[in-house]
Image (cartoon, rainbow, N blue to C red):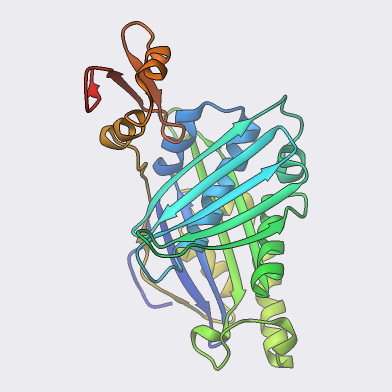
Length: 306
C-alpha cells in the first residue's frame, strides 16, 4: 500500500486484493454508532445486533452509484420482531428495532428467530424500488448476510462483524462497531457482471478461497480497537498478496425526521383523532429512529410546534 493518511473512525473504505477480482470494504464506527445505539437504550444483546445491521447496510450501501438509500430489514418470530437499518448515499446512517418479548441469547438466530431479510434499494422520487428477500439463515447476522448474497445475488461473500462497548483512558464506555466484507466481483474490472461461483476458473477459486480464509481470521478487537487502523488491519491480512486501498468515505448518524414531515403526517388525521392524541395540552411524537421528541398543538392548519 502506498503511504497515506490513516483512516479515522466513522468511515468506510474499499479495497482490492492484489490483481484479483476479490474486492471488499471495511467500516469503522465510533461516535456515529454510539449516538444511534445510546438513543435507544436497548438491552445489550439487541444493541449488538442492531450495530451489526448498521455495519452490514453501510458496507453494502457504499456500492450504490446513484443518489438514494439502501434499506436493510429483518423480520422474524423471535424477541426482535423487526430490525431496520438504512444507509443514504453520502454517508447517512440510522437504525432501530421493535421488540416483542424477553431477550434470550445473542445473535440473529436467538433474537430474530425464523423469518426473512429484505434489502431494498430506494432511488427516491418516482423511481421504482428494487428489493431482494431471502430467509434468515445461520446463527449470526454475518451468516445471514452471506446467505443473502449467495441466494439473491449469487456472489461469493465473506463477512465479519464486531460490536461492543470500549472504555478509553479518562472516558466513559462508548459503543463501537466494525465490519469487513469481501466478494468475488469480476464485474467491477473483469468480463463478467456477477461473481457466480460456477463461473470461477481454478485461479479465481484459489484466490477467493485464500482471501476468504484470511478474512475469517479477523478478530473482534481488530475491528473495534481504535488503535488498529483499517490500513493496519488490511496489511496484516494481505501483505503477502498486496492490497489496493481506496479513499475513505465518511459515515455519520443521520435521521431523516423533521418537524415538517411529522406535521404533514398529523394533518392527515381527523380532528377527533387528533384530540385523542393530546396529552398535557400537546401531541407528542417520538421518532423511532433517533428518539427525538416533537411536540405539537392542534391549532388550525397546519399543525404548529410547541
